Image (cartoon, rainbow, N blue to C red; front, side, top):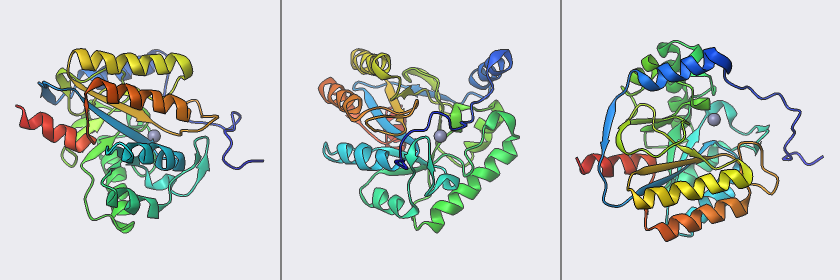
Length: 263
Ligand SMILES: [Zn+2]
């Protein structure tokens, strides 16, 4: 059997659902907010990849490179060199390549834990372990962006991590505009098949009409993607839409700097 094939029978962790999950998500979004005023004449788009699979490097990064764009790659050290439902994941040496190509190598927590089930201190110490992993891999720049695994956060973890990182990303769909939360930036997924592609392209059109900061996050890019991945064609359509939109494409940390410079 092809080692990289998506195995639908594999057990995949899913964060808490139901009422408890909804209440928890509401609290994480509503409280511990660090306001970020976004006032832009020209929209900004960020492409980010989580975990991240080799296909995000091979297709994701290379197609950004071809356009002179750079992306943000959220690394979980504990996922290095393994194979899971996203296919083969990155090897530590891939990180140096990304950094030398000008991409942003960012933090996703070492053990890819659900922060809503942990104390803020436990989330911070797992993040510190991941920074040590990145340093060990030879990266000379300390990561300044963080993405919560599964997008799960708490008000306390948001505040605690902003002591170390300049921005934190979640997975709540939407465009960051007006007053956003620097501790839980909204993002749109690169997944969901046809409906997901329409949602992604609509978001690009939306941000072009009413400038803000649109962050995409993806996982694998394959002919037969996982539930959280997309096909190469899906990705190309989104890249093309962004190209047509006149938006500037920036990494998460560069986008934040550009937004802060406008204040
Ligand atoms: Zn992840």
